[in-house]
Length: 250
Length: 80
Image (cartoon, each protein chain N blue to C red):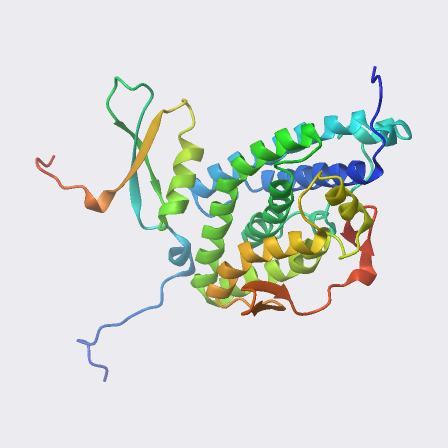
């Protein structure tokens, strides 16, 4: 029996989204454990699948500690949960290996960016999990980066398919951090649960992925600000399609 | 009539374009008092990916040390 539940709707919502995204990524990865183009990649896919599902398994139990869980207790268990707070692009199976690589490189890295901002979280359970997750995600990023390079440099239809996969994920991944005035993320930042605003999280994320994409001549609507030496979004994101509760685009 | 001495260069097949070509021999050890020994190999054109693959595939033990050696750097002293 929970003696005293935490009453924090913002943290509950973000934890739900993190858990659902990890679960969805793991499930989509799982189908490709024996469908990767090379044996080594298939084994790496299996290892990453285990990691992602493991991360989800460590996050869902945290929901039970919240007062918000009392309203719908079935929603805190992955087996009975009917809400889907993961990115809409994860609703469908991957159409091919390029979708796997794009998700690995863009979506996984976005979630890791959040966990990096929670490494010194004032919410102890998140701090503990964030440090472990960030450590395990290092290999995931190397895998994603390596395969983005290989597929991009292959040229022709392979490169074109990769770019299409990346483009499908781009807007929603960037939106996941929330708009600049996102009350949920800002509340977490003010409470020192994370150490960054939505714009700062998005900026940190772009500094990771854009050097690689730029070196491969894969263009996205971002510009490099030479004054502050940061990659910045140059085109408005589709906030009119943003669903604030589920943190996804409709 | 075509010159039969001309080299015909075909573009790589798509399968070959994605196939890894570099082999890395994997050596590891479980205890400090045992030597590094070969446990297998992985194929990857990129050393960082090779490290990912080696750690993913050869995870049956808690190795205290694991190294990769590009096969092309191995020098045969006595051949079989």
